[in-house]
Length: 261
Image (cartoon, rainbow, N blue to C red; front, side, top):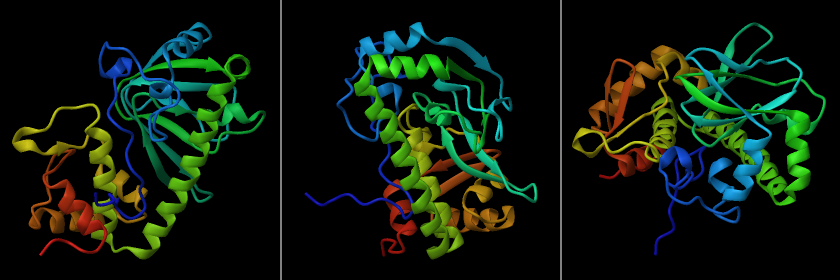
């Protein structure tokens, strides 16, 4: 079997699963694939224990879940919806670092003890979440030491993602960087939505061209030109805040610099 490759700057997506946000069936155990979202990797007993120390909360679109610079006093687990992670530079420029979706652990710096948050997490769409005070979460982890491994794995994976992002932004051209980003988002989106009309994959997180540009270290104009290139290659279709990936394997190949002839 040929080993699967992924676009520059991105690893494999979390596999599709049967977590509560994806369906009512039994959930997976903690020993499953490393690329699962945090909640998806917990077993039923671990989830029940976490719900006991959490409180549910809803966030409207554009509402921050936590703020850069604030003291880390709680963690959040997204049950439904999408959020972006962004950091503001010294000159006031906001840089998108990632998107988080159903099952993801966010504002996780509270686990590391007394420190200030390094980024702001903002709802891109209405978000349902579980909010857990830091002390309760660390107490929960002490009672469920096997979950510590999942949390530390989340930290390590996100550090790796940040390193790959920097490498991709340095080594790839604008259209290639956008192709890599859209392939990553398409694989993430495919976990939660049926195929779009014609069999394509609609990008689920509602990101603007400006936000996409911030994520890939490019201007909005660069994103618009790159989308034009990808449309002409029949790899994507676009509309108002809507991007549909028409050919995911072709998009991956384009991102890697060796499109099919």
